[in-house]
Amino acid sequence: MRILLTLLVMMSFACASTDEAYRRLLESPEYRKTQLRVSHLAQGQPKSVAGLIEILAQSPAVRAITLHVLLDTRCRRYLPRPDRRPCGKAVWEMIQLLDFDVKFLRDQWSGEGPVPPFVFVAFKRQLLQRLNDPRTHDFLTALNAGLEHQERRSQAAHATNLWSSTVHSFGAQAAGVLAILMQDTSAAPVHMEYLARHDSQEGRFFTPNLLLLGRALEQLHERREADPAAYARFVYPTDLPQTYNNIYHFYVPWHLAEELVTRGHAPRYAAIAPFLLGVTYEFITAGADLRYLLADPATLSSQWKARDILAGHAGALCGTQRTVPAERGQVALIQQDTGRAVRALLGAL
Image 1 (tube, rainbow, N blue to C red):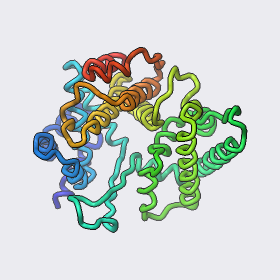
Image 2 (image 1 turned 30 degrees about the vertical axis):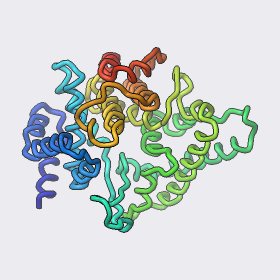
Image 3 (image 1 turned 90 degrees about the horizontal axis):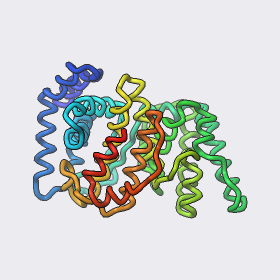
């Protein structure tokens, strides 16, 4: 009953683009209760990641509120007062667009630890739609063939750029297609693990497309491991002044910013929301526990994480049709002074 009531509350805020609806969201008992739980989790000892997962496991509604609490904290920390409410509203609509889900693998749980292992997916409905689209079948078939052909050719030869070929197949939807299909390009993509356990009936293209996507992700991962520079030239737009570590840190913010603009958000806030999503992720995962759940590190030792933050910034700029500047010391600044760096990057949005 509690989950049902929570979902009903959240449905009443599904169109939270108006000030009144957004105000009711923030003042709802469920929001305040979740906010308090997150605050206690951030202050408690030990600061266990499992505690956060337990909150996220409760329901889609609680997951959405929890993510909003985390991101809205950064809106209020890094932005001047007039920007904070529009930032929070854009963040809330972005969370609806993310449409993320968690599936717990209870059949693989030995009973040790506080929660079972889990996999998750973003853009759940859009991903299922793409995997049922015959255009996706043609696109992934051509992508796999091109990658396999390139593997057999000399290293001096250049493959067709992934961004260019996606634009050719999907036009203005290209950033969304790459954000949705390529949301994890690691050796074990979590969205593929999620889809392997998806049990609803799908159309005739779903299974073939799922196999093609798995093969494409495998080949992309192999290419990245073998030659990171050639991989970067292949997966990013050729007019970018620099490339980044993981394509999903670039294309996901691009897609989200584009979508927020189409839903009426000013380009500045449409860019800020997905940028802060990446910043929050990188800061929280900079600690082995949850010390940075609501607080942020003063410095960031990882150059890799700093570059991921810049990837999100570049994607947000592209998603709002603005030029990405060349990198001029931002990686070093992020590592040395995160607060100053984030405020400077926000100022450029």
